[in-house]
Amino acid sequence: MKQPNILLILCDQFRWDCLSVMGHPTVETPNLDTLANEGALFTNAYTPAPSCVPARASLFTGMSPSQTGFIGYQDGTEWNFPNMLPEVLRNSGYQTHCVGKTHFFPQRKHCGFEGLESYEAWQVFGHHYVNDYHEWLADKTGKMMDELHHGLDDNSWNARPSTLPEELHNNTWVVTKGLEFLKRRDRTRPYFLNLSFHRPHPPIDPPQFYWDEYMKKECEQVPVGDWAAKHDKPVRGLDTWEGHLDEGKLRRTRLAYYAQIAHIDTQIGRLIRSLKYQGEMPDMIIFTSDHGEMLGDHHLFRKTYAYEGSAAVPCIIWTKDKAYRSKEETPIVLQDLYSTILGYANIPQPDYVDGCNLMPLLNHESQADVGKNIFDRKWIHGEHARCYSPDEAMQFMTDGKTKYIWFTHTGEEQLFDLEKDPYECHECSKDGVYKEVLLEWRKRMIDYLATREEDHLSDGKELITGLLPVKRKGMHQ
Image 1 (spheres, rainbow, N blue to C red):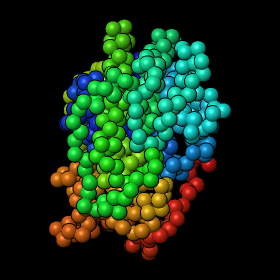
Image 2 (spheres, one colour):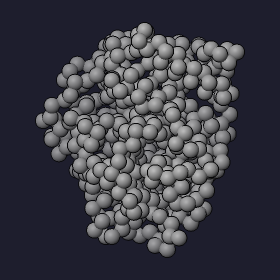
Image 3 (cartoon, rainbow, N blue to C red):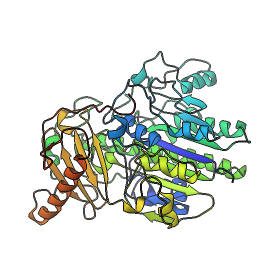
């Protein structure tokens, strides 16, 4: 049986709602919409840990953060995981290749990719690390350039148009190098290609054309919750994680972010048109992001939060042999994609994997007794250790209809009715109407944490607060 060719398109910090097929009033994503309309669009997809490193660790290992040991943003810890997705595929005969951001450490570690054309932010790794995009840019321009010479920070809410021509932008480079790989690949073997866009993660620097187009648009009202007053304070600098931006600056930030997404969508369209023209469409395409971006919602920026802007992600699965044309509401997490890809390729997965194969759900088939069963899934769990502030360390659960958040340092609880309030503007934990719902979700959290080795519980019955995060002895050690 012929093994399928698989394309994984991964973005960084791409919000769940920023697809026009999801009803977004401003951003336009016709190419991703086409994939979603022909394939399956998962409307309740979540990251298990809303920052780059732990989210990607879960995606590429199939394990939850409690298994990987990455429960927060942990740069500088070597990735020593067994059976990473590209490694398993390579060992099964695949030619594995990655273009773009990995966030692996050390930076040039391939983690199972035979070919790696890497783009990593110099702020994370330093100027002494080799950045393949910058080398390519130097070759094209005849001089070594720092693409951030425009002065934007790699975590800033500030935005301005890129000073580079569109054909030299980082988004364009990802697709250009991906097409080059597909042209030169070993055609005696199936391929697994990961195209990994660094954007729309800051710097928010779309090409000039997209900047101009989106600055003409109206910006939708920014959601601010009745619980968000503690974040309504003066902004501290250009790379803050919280604060009140004036209306003009926030409008520019959000529209520039949408412009960045529009450029990514255009490049994905360029890729797909080229593959169709050449008769080289892969058998499977998956599109997703490692986490989202708060983008000023509730006076918050960046990620690491349990709120939808940060924790929910877009997810589309398209296959050549079947047009699903469906919207799937079952809650899923990134580690499910590990199991789904291996399941689609008929490759056994390790028995310790936490993810569920999503193909039986899409095909309306019964689940074999291998791995976790997606039809048993009632809710998903996510978490993040302290990052910007100790108060932000949290655990959350959701079924896509209700969300429960427990802040591990303060003991604060939040409850949101996502069916009535998808942008989490009303916090329900103190509403008498939701008393039984709160107790039900709190018990679910207690029952789940009772299976963990961290001491989050008192006598297995109550949640303990005020603890510093425990660094688990995960499988990377």
